Length: 175
Image (tube, rainbow, N blue to C red; front, side, top):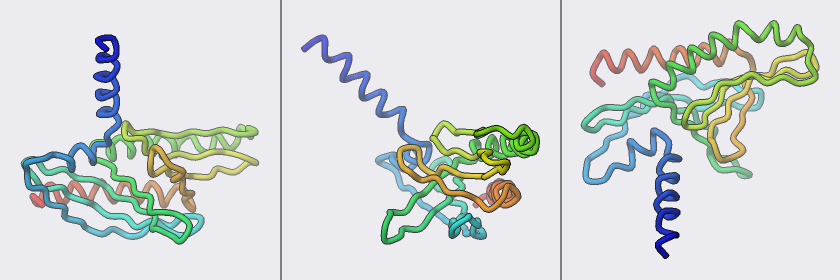
C-alpha cells in the first residue's frame, strides 16, 4: 500500500496539470465569479462558421478569454476553445510567423507539410500543405476531434488580432 501512495499522488498532480486556464479560473470555490460576454463577428469556415466573442471572468482578478464556438449539430456536441489573453498574444505572434512561411512552404511542393502553433491548453492554429495548396485550420479542443478548416489565412489573422484589440480595449476601460 505504501508503494501505491506515491502513484496516487502523482496521478492527482498529473490530472491537475491537464486543466485549462479557463477551467482553473472558473473552478475556484468559495468565491463569486461573474461571466460577461461580448460578441465579435463570426469566423468563416470552409463549412459553416464559428461564433466568437470575448468572455471576461470577473472575480478578485479579472481574466479575459477569446471564445471560439462551433455550434452543436444533430451529429455532434458544441466545440469550444477558450483562449486566455496571454496565449492570444502568443498566437498572434505565431500567426505573423506562419503567414511569412506559408508561400515558401507551398512553393516547396511537398507531398505533405504541416506548420502549426499549439498553446499550453492544446489549442492549435496552423496550416497544412498538400497538392500545392495551403489549408488553414484551428483545433479547438485538446482531447476531441474538434478541427475546423478556415476559408483563408486573412480571416484567421484578422479575427485573432481583432480579439486581442477588443480585450485590450476592455482592460483599458476596466470592464
